[in-house]
Length: 291
Image 1 (cartoon, one colour):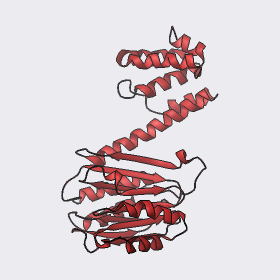
Image 2 (cartoon, helix red, strand yellow; image 1 turned 180 degrees about the horizontal axis):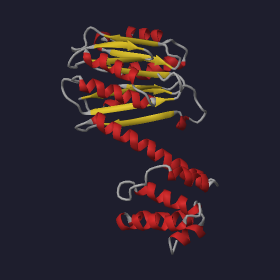
Image 3 (cartoon, one colour; image 1 turned 135 degrees about the horizontal axis):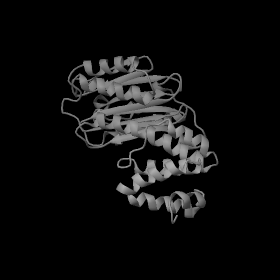
Image 4 (cartoon, helix red, strand yellow; image 1 turned 60 degrees about the vertical axis):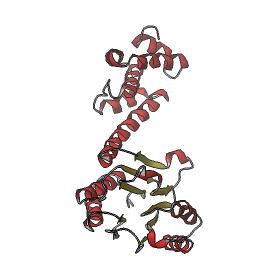
């Protein structure tokens, strides 16, 4: 839990396939749950319903374990948006298995190299700055550095939600990224996190420009490193269109020329923006003849 923003989140890594489908559960405005070690999804889905219904974290965990035929096999943590936390490691979990509660966090691990996995995760989380998602990924990396899952690595996931709902549910999930099958899932998740932030910055600026403020949008985009025509063609297109709307048409033409050289289909998409009226048609015609 991030005490400044109120955001709550879960990050997980496993040798299992698509761990993001079974371990992390999150509900904006209420809390997050992690259920693992022969995971029972009931703890996540029903647990969130209980939090929404006013149950405390401990009450939720007690209620769920009471109807579970094999609670000894489970490892579960429930954290609500106010910081109320309940955690459980069953005595039937495969060694090494255990958990450690820290300040506004808890680390759970089973079938790992040693207790250093979960203790290092708490230490790294508490000593790392930045966003909640950044700190969660740092904790995963610490677990990996201390041996991680004894079976190896395959998948990872991170989800972060807001503490209060905005009335627009599509904006209440801050991060939701998964790597289902990869040799180095934590590293891949970290790469996706970097790309996610950059992608959102460009999309936000493009939206600002087409909503009537291209000058501010252009200034914001100029503060980012240049978009890569080969790897970020969609972002370079938006960047060029914003520059054109802001009056920097020569710069827009240069970017579009770079884009045409490697991904000409995106240049055609730029023309379609003009024909749809999303970007002023006269701007598109000047920076893309025939637009």
